[in-house]
Image (cartoon, rainbow, N blue to C red; front, side):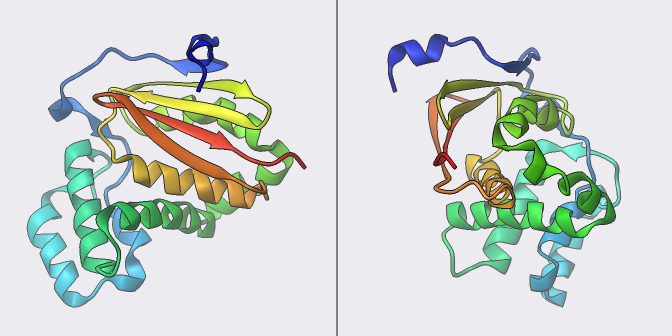
Length: 198
């Protein structure tokens, strides 16, 4: 990537001061992770989830580090044929697919094809920041069909969001979609999203 590309003014940005990882919270129910992996949950897996994460089940928010531990446990227990990094990506894909099955998801995602990927990416910093209490996120357009999404002070594994972006692109019928990421600094994930012109 040309060095000058890093100085392009973001099209959208949400700023938050850095905070300790222990203070980072996800503002949704941790039960959503179980719903995503529902087809794979055996009685033994459910029992282990209850034993290790029962204190957080049914709550309206939970520590992000606990959510990461649960997702990694589910990925390894439910998708043992995949490496953890690939299982996380598949979890991200399944998360969007599961949301699409809900009543709210059907309503919210119905307009995606009319919006286009550029408009969705412009909204990404705000949408991602709405479900947690931490992180600075911004999006820039590096060129035609070439965007970059940065997440700073981020502790979530990048593969999960990578999988989610891939599925959104599929719903938008973005041909030739490629979602890659790099780690420019600790706790800084930079996603590059490219696709083919229509």
